[in-house]
Image: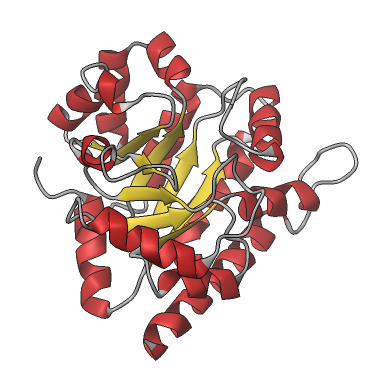
Length: 278
């Protein structure tokens, strides 16, 4: 693969001595236009990489917050085609910020793998995280994605031992996503000391950057993780900021967009302060 936006972003962050802030939001939550406005404003708020969730009816690895975000998006009519359209719209004003689509294989399979990859390239997608496709199925989507210049990002977990790790990272590109806790998203806070040890463990098997997610909610938590990792992933806290901003009927409130951006700015500041003190 040639150098991607993801590679370029991590290179510039490394030169600056700072960890990446990777922000996850669900595409189409709470509706297409509001979601697009949130995504367009994330880089200015401090996001270095954007993970865009592909809504799916059966998100087995996600906690309640992201499950509900997906339900809101699907109810509002979000589809995989609309998610790709959202990336296309974002690229009209931002050609530098990496965008990673994250979700499950079923919507991609239904869309058609080759058609999906071709449309993703045209839209400006940089990477994929497909949580239910193991390395044993690399021929299915991982290797074809890489041929199209799209990074395929793998998850490593606290249960990924030294024997399994090389297989997990074998065809990984862009970065490795280390899941800091066992279980579903947004349910536990990560232990920075344990995370540091596991990041070092993952780095024995790959030269790729390691980003840590699951359970990071506050600037202080982000700062603690940033001291050991190349990036900090925050998702559940952002989709919760959307949910709590909606009125009783689920309609957008005055803080729906601004509240997410304010939270991102605080997280970015925490990471910046932690790396400046390192």
